[in-house]
Length: 497
Image (tube, rainbow, N blue to C red):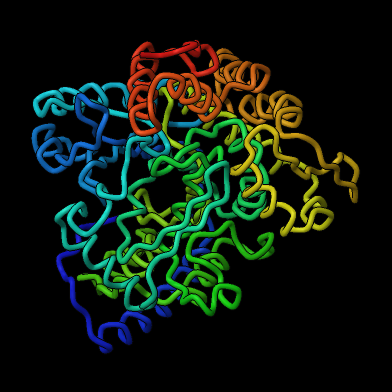
């Protein structure tokens, strides 16, 4: 969510001036992207890991600020709800063993945070949605006590006077309404950042947009919410609906703030930033304390504080990022993957997504004309809903042909392409092989985190009611996760205690 924000109340002058500054930022970014050599540099990969804090009974633990203070590491930040934290891993060069570097740093941070949680009789849960959440755990009192989140809630409520409606189909369909955005804190993700040279941005962004669906299908880890069995990756539906700023009468007239996009990218990165400003009103109209080109002489990049802040409140599943660091550069933030079940599972998901995207980016881009974007958008949500059984459309290898097949079969076919993409980027062969083998084995076994949770919950319900069975399932999940073994190897107890 970017830098700290202290201001919580805004008037129309704030919004008007902020909109002016957004226009100035877009103009400056356009000039910057025209500079020869801007943003050129080695590819890097970074990550943000959101997690839940739970107590000994596997219930949400509302002590994120105390635990963060005890850890005292700037890479650990609080998230929206009091039972959420986020870990920020340092970028690693893509060439070599980047995933080992990310995994090593994340494990160190997890150990530190786990130590802080133990002081509060707590532990960590890496999972897309915490199964033991109840409606009593979500509401104004659970929001983390920082001005930014209160201001964000007010900004969304300014645009949407209606309650935030959640409607999700599934085995146990769910409908509820909330007067604030704390439902968003029910989601926990593993967000991956890939630095891209501006000249390669369009091809790579389109590739990421297409690649996300099969990767999400094999990565599902959020099958329940508030005791309801819903999608394989229910987090996708919950997040989108919990921060939807559109009034009830206008959803089809304006794109949601959380969406895959409006179509295949035809221009460059500037088009995505422009679209965010054009389609989505500001939520946090805080002016930066530096002039637009402060420090921007020569090759030093301008801060563009207002544009970066606005972009942080438009939650595309794959988001363009401008960063003034290192002379200024562009990244693609891949936001669709869930947290958990283990670090190795998350690294495997990231390797599959990055490798497949890089391979696709190197192909003839005719597929962006043969495959309508609406089919890719539909496939993304079907992957979230149905996991490995989803039917996904994919380029057939001929210039104007596409085919549709089950995600499980498609994933198996795409693993060699992902390996090729990683190797061409300089990733060590042993690292690529090891992580992609996790994906292959998961697809072959059919056991994603979501599938394991469903099966374990069903077994627990032979002895317990739904509420108790969810706690039993989560406790078993945490025990298996502590082994560090990937989820496809986890046993499903016939009747867990």
